[in-house]
Length: 309
Image 1 (tube, rainbow, N blue to C red):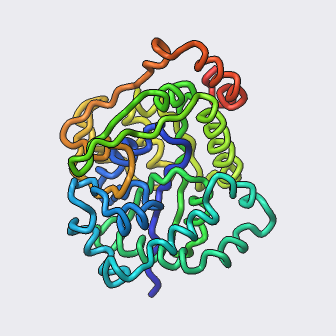
Image 2: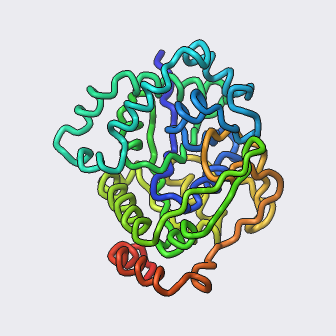
Image 3: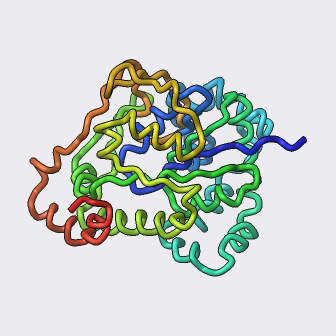
C-alpha cells in the first residue's frame, strides 16, 4: 500500500513579512511541524551547522540527527555543495522567467533529479520522525515552490504572504542584529529602491505561478494575521483541508510557543513562552518621506491590487 502524501504548506513571498512568526504559530497545531526555511538546509545545516530553533547547533540536535540518519544515513552522506549548486542554478530570482515557459515542469524535473530525490527523502523523514501530517516550510521562494510541486509524494499548498511594501522597505532599512552561538550578527539591509523591485518580482511571480490553482493557493496579509491571528489561521486551515478546533491561542492575540526545530529564518524562531502578536506599522510614523515615495511609486500597482492604497 503506497504511503499517504505529505502535506506541505509552503509560505511564499518576500522577506520581512512575518513568515517565521506565521510558521511558528502554525507549527503549534497538533500534527503540524514547522521546519523554517527548509530550502537552506544544505548550507545552514551541513556546511555551517547553524543553530536550530531549539538553540542547539543543528548537528547536535536530536531531531535533525534522527532525520538525516533516517533519510541519508547521516550528515556526511549528501554533498551539500552539490545540492547548493543545483538549488542556485534554478531557483534564483533571475531564473523566474523560466517558470513560465511551456513544459517548464518537465524541464526542471529533468535538470533537478538528484536534488528532488534528496528533497523527497528529507521531507519523508521529517514527517516520519516528527510524526506530523503537515510540514510548514517558510522558504518564501516562488521557484522553490515549483520544485516542491514536482515531488510526487508531496501534497503542496502555497500560502502567499504579503505585507505593505513600505513596511517591508522600512524594516530592511533599519540596522538589526541577532545573536547566534554567542555571535552578534548584523542582518542584511536593503535600499528602498532595491527592496521595492524585489517585492514586486516575488509577489508578481508567486501570484502568476499559483493563482490558476485556487485549491493550492491562498493569499494572506501580514496585517490581517497580526491583527486577528485566530481568524487568519482558521482561514488557512479551511483552505488546506485541516480542522481548526484546537488553536494555540491563550487569548485573542497571545499564543503559547514551544521550542521548534526551524533550520533557518528570522530570529523570532527562537521565541518561546507566551508571545503577543502585534501589528508593526512603525513605518507610518517614522519612515523618511523620500523612502516612502520611492516604495509607493515602484509598487503602487500591486499595492492597489492588494488593497493597500
